[in-house]
Structure formats: C-alpha cells, structure tokens
Image 1 (tube, helix red, strand yellow):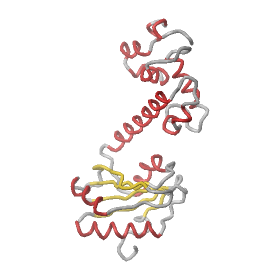
Image 2 (image 1 turned 45 degrees about the vertical axis):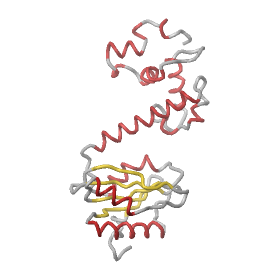
Image 3 (image 1 turned 180 degrees about the vertical axis):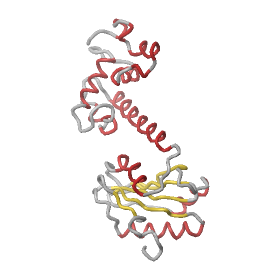
Image 4 (image 1 turned 90 degrees about the vertical axis):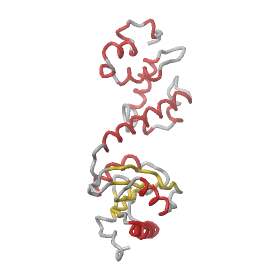
Length: 236
C-alpha cells in the first residue's frame, strides 16, 4: 500500500472514518495509524501500522500487548520505524497499560493477597531490577494510591519507612501493602525481605497504620507474608 493517505477513498482513511463513525469503528491497525499520523516515503501511516502489527504477531505477545514488551531497539527493527516512532509506540503501550490499570482499580477492593498479586504480576514479573511499590488502602481495603519507594540492583532494594509512612499519613491511609519483585523469578523471601517487613511494621505500628501484607512477585508466582502467617511481630 504505497498510496499517500489523501489518495485513499475517504472511507478508507482512519482519521476521516473516526470522525464519521467514532473510534470504536476503527481496527487496531487503523487506531495505530491515526496516532502515528505519518508514514514514510514508501508507505503511508496505515501500511506502516500494519507492519507494526505484523511484527508483534511474531512475538510471544501478539497484537497491541506486544508494544508493552518490545524494547525501543526491537521496534526500530521494523522498516520505517525510527527512534522517534519507536518511542511513540512505547508510550502508546504504556498509556494503554495505565488506562487499563486505572479503570481496573476503581472501587477495587484488595482484601486478599491473590488480588494484590494478580494486579501487580504483569507489571513486575518481567522487571530486571528489584522494585518496591507501596499500596495505600482505606479501612475497607479500597485502593487509595501507590508509589514506588525504591529501585535497586538485581537482588536488593533500599526501603525507608519514614518515607512510606509520611506518604501514607498524607493520603490518610489506614493500611499499607508492600509489593516487590524478585528478578530471579523465585518469590521466596530473603533475610533482607524479612528484616524490611519487620522494620516497616514496627514503624507503622507507632503511627497506627497497619502493615497488611508484604507480597513478593516472582515469575507467575507470589509469596505473601500474610498467607504464611509471617506478618506478626513474633514471626518476623
């Protein structure tokens, strides 16, 4: 498809089709073409978007989800995709992920470890470094917010209880849940993980905020201190 976009019939142009029928009427390729806007000298935006979709179909995550998992360098291997468009595609994937997460967590109640693990599994299981996220919830275990407290090496994070509790108090949270990943894929807690849990719990008890759980994300597996009865003082 080497025709310029304005040479196509109006009903085949994604932008005009969106104006007339709404974005729901567009295919994924057409939606991507609207966002990319421009093609190259040899292919229009629609053809370029089709090339992107075809490229992702040959990966473990075909279709739009592939944009979440492909790196900028991998996207640049697609003919017509340079660094600028590769970054655009990565941002599209990230925006899609954040919209999906935001929608999913509205009124979501995290009242058991599996619901928390399911929520963070895809986000953390492929990370190459340890990352600690603090989830803030109210008395009904409804989501109030989250923030990343540390990002460390492949086997360690640095956690500051003061920073955690300052944000929890600001958000008027009644409970906090620690969530972090193990890049090795094995979610079994290390001695440092146990010490971190103890330190945060002791500090949280002083402020009246409850440490509800510490969940470690592995590769499609998780470990919950709560499920293993390791959240009590005498256990940790």
